[in-house]
Amino acid sequence: MDRTTDALSLLLSTLKEHPRGMSVSDLAAAVGINRNTVSRYLDILLVSGRVEMETYGKAKVFYLSQRVPIAAMLNFSSDLVLVLDRERRIVQANDAVCAFAGRERDAVLGNSIEESPLAAFDHPLIRSRITDALNGREVTEELRFLRHDAELFFRIKFLPTVFNDGAPGVTIILEDITEGRRAEEALRESEMLFRSLVENINDLILNVDETCTFTYVSPKSRDILGYAPEEMLGKTPCDFMNPEKAESVRARFAALFADPEPKVAFEWTMHHRDGSHVVFDVSGTPVYDMIGDFTGYRVVCRDVTERVRATKRVAQWKSFLYSVVNNVPSMVFVREVEGNTFVFANRAAEIFLGMTQEEMTGKRAADLFPPEMAGFFADGDREMLERSAALERKVHLPTGASISMKKIPVFNSRGMLRYMLGIAEDITDRAAAEDLLVAERDRAQGYLDAAGVMIAVIGADGSIDLVNRKGSEILGYAEEDLAGRDWFATVVPERLRDRLTRNFVRLAAGEIEPPAFEESPVVTREGRERSILWHNALLRDIDGKVVAMVSSGEVVGE
Image (tube, rainbow, N blue to C red; front, side, top):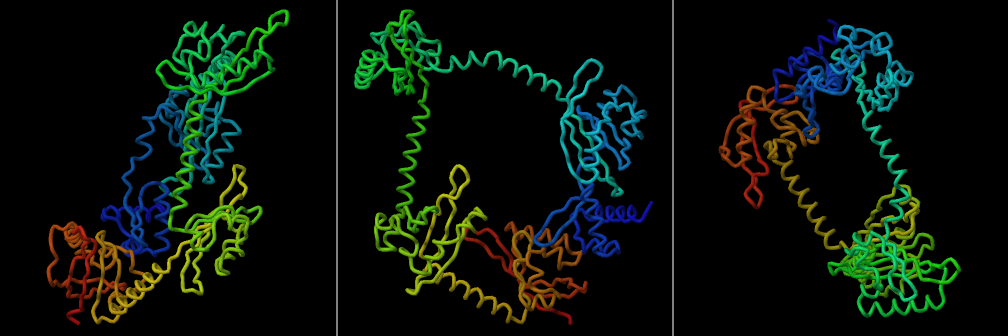
């Protein structure tokens, strides 16, 4: 067994003893190997699926994998599954492979594909894809080949694989898609045979004579209007319309019969049997008999009810959105990129600039905005085009106002930058409140840093929200190195870690209250234990839920 295998086994056995997981530093200390080497070995174990990793803040914690080994799953697959080593020898083959090859597994394993009963798959494309997979690239291909008198199709996946010793390999999965391909070919043939028929019956076909009476109605009338063709024969289109609509249709046909046109198009609304309205796009072609006399029109009616409804919904939404945009408190501007002029502004913009939308239309940014805002809204089209994302900026006007500005690119259907959508908001009051909040935060942080005791804020999930300067000095860490790390995995001695973690879980759940004072050790960055006398208090939200624990402590016994 080589050094790599020894090290991997040592890491796995160490993780087995710590089911709650260990960090790289913990593992390095436990096995006596430097941290960088442990990281490389952990990468091998991650890729091979033997360990898993979770991130807690800046810390990475590793666990033994609970995944089922691939060898235990191969024989349950109906697909053909092969595993090759770096020399392209077959080291695993499931039952489906053996059944396909008609050979025992011993006759398959240990051979290269070209020397095995699977030589039929010794194809240049497969050899190339195996090389790709050995180089770490996952590939999927479809392959067709003849076996005896049958034509077979396979979807083949080439998956990079890493063995326990870190050596590369390839897993090949062959999915038989022959039946699907045959079904697709049969479907294509069927579509070719019936395409012309389907195309001719999608629309409602009507013939009307010189009196506007139906002389032919296609079977599609059942689906579109709910009437059988024979129920409509002998009637006119006007019999299926509201009287006010029918009169205009009757007048239109009278004009067409008096002077037939080669092709006409108009819109009808007819009644469905259930009382609903069906909207048609209608195109009509004059019909002549054998001696050239005009006999009526052949009319093709396409149901566009949903399209008309959708158009109405779009119009309603446009009206609604215009109303919303026009009444939001933020200022909204639209600049046309090509002419670099503004084409829209909402009511808030009118109030801010002191002019109407009509007065703003056609003007440039320099004509509308203070200099501090004009440059932002006038320039930057290239940057928006390259980023395809919104740009933001805050400015302070000489009046004392603070303005938050954003501009968003709007592209047409061809992907060309067409408009710039600008949004501006007066955040003077908010900015002042934020400044006050920052000052209060800095003042509070100063109080914490000036305190002569260690202060730590531990979130309900056990992560470190804050450690003051004194606490960082005691623990031997920089303040920024502790934020986000697991308190118990970082500073609690291992012999106490499980018990204190369980107690904290109960505290966070509100099941128990912390003692007023307790003495408990911490582990410094250098591994030294220091005893601390703690005073703990729970922080709760407005619903009474525990969100953190604040602990202050002093070093004792030194």
